[in-house]
Image (cartoon, rainbow, N blue to C red):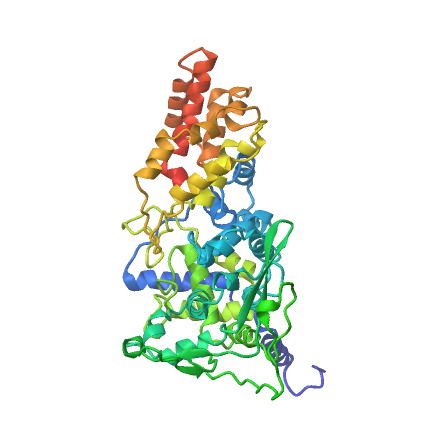
Length: 543
């Protein structure tokens, strides 16, 4: 624009030009999501007349974010490096570092593997050994495949390892309908399986319309490298049969076919099969690939489910991921997003979904925005007894999962660094620990640890065996350190519970361990000190 010859003043013209830029590149001027989160959460405190806790110190933040992103506590070296850094943006740099760590994908895989299959999966004979699925899913997270991309791949099941979701519900389209709706759409459909929902706009035909997308799926099992490999096929014919309300069904009633229908949406527009079409005999197919269907229902379902226009998908995702880091969803529980389920923070719910869509369902970006909020970084200490405060005025307190506990014990005791014939925890120990610590919550964040945990930690032989001094591990390193015993206690505390001891704690520990001059007694007392710290609530919970 020629500002000299313009009849507008240069100032006005510049402002107009900047306004046009803002319209075309509005995201450059938009408010970061982390600030939107803090503003809306703070508004909730004011509304409820709540006083938030102070921000967590570096030690607490460090331990929390390691557990939430990597599923384990930081090593002594990692903790020491972070705590000694003095840059103002070190928390942001740490979050970036952890999101790029290969352990990130493995931990997120464990979270979703358990969400999808639970501790007791359906069809365990097919899904018990699912290492290929776990490897595939971990890679999706590490490669930062978008959330809509991951879900599409699971529904399409065309990549090696991605088929296990369908395998779990082999020949059970109704069960798969319930699972897909709950996990990815945040909607409970099981009531509509038997009868029209009495309180919501959900009929049995809505349920069976969704089941129609899965009824044609076929599962082929082969063996590769001595492991089971699955391929998902899809027939071109076959319908779900609807027999009406289960209370009114009559013996021998075969029902009527129901065409696929998107949840509370349109019916699937599906072309008719050619008159001369003949369905392959899938029972005779023993080797992949399956023949392609004339028309793929699962492809249309994947497309509809992950569309930005889907009224369920984005909100269900952000609500579930928010709960993963904040302890509870804006709608709680996370799998019940009914029209009557009002979020605690409606504007925040809308903003999270809108921005998640605008950023193409980018998981690492979304996680980072949550983790860098003041809401996430609050201290867990404060008034109230809720482990997961409804208004997020305190950080949530949660027990470590079995997988997190096993991984953290390895890191804290430097188990993998020890020169030993046992390069990994015995399978019996891992299996036993998973069984004991595998169900620490009731599904809504309430800790329900039992006497079996105390017996394992206090009386079992496994934990002392992990702690016992072997060349390279924590006990051995501290015993042979040239540092003062006070310095060794600093290393002990930072290695196990991710904080340095108070002066009183340091002096008491040093006094106890060095009360004897006998080397064997000193070793026994040091191992006992390690055992004590690993049995504290500071280690058992995330803080």
